[in-house]
Length: 204
Ligand code: GDP
Image 1: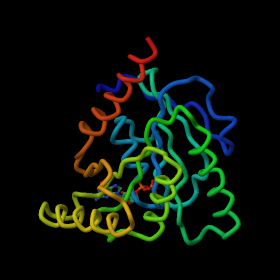
Image 2 (image 1 turned 90 degrees about the vertical axis):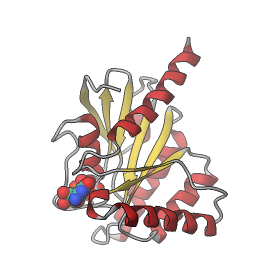
Image 3 (image 1 turned 180 degrees about the horizontal axis):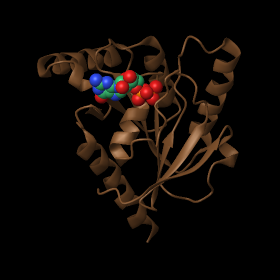
Image 4 (image 1 turned 45 degrees about the vertical axis):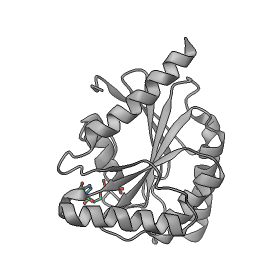
């Protein structure tokens, strides 16, 4: 998929205020500092589209971007940042869960995890919640340039093992990416493009 346009639409704290236009939608979420903003900017090739935050946890809104006039990319707040107070955590957890439960046009959520780290409790808990809530998601491993190919393979296998131990029957669809090395962009966009195509084919 070629990106011909990427426009910021709006920023909301409530799912009810999100754009009404029924376009297929894809959300990006992960722990603060996982590389979400960098990945979004790399995907749409706009440097400043998603704000890479010097202070993680700052962007606590649901941010909609319209891509190619036919799909929404949604930048969700980073979770699990220790410096956000417990009350703030609870509030945005609630609106994140509301977003997933109420946003029917969501085609897929991309859950970002740093490929260098072992599976984190908060990510596993979040994926479990997504599973039981029947929200389709994929895993995006970020920062793959930081380790060598053999370590990448090992880390992905370790992650799969953790998920199977956690009750999953198989590893969800996943992508290995690096914003710094522009890795994974084509595969990810092709995946989105395929879903968009079936979405629009069904509408005809
Ligand atoms: P966010 O908080 O999840 O939006 O994360 P950012 O995109 O702001 O990135 C957090 C930090 O990780 C920044 O210092 C980025 O430069 C760095 N980073 C993000 N993606 C990559 C990557 O693919 N490779 C490397 N080496 N660093 C990255």
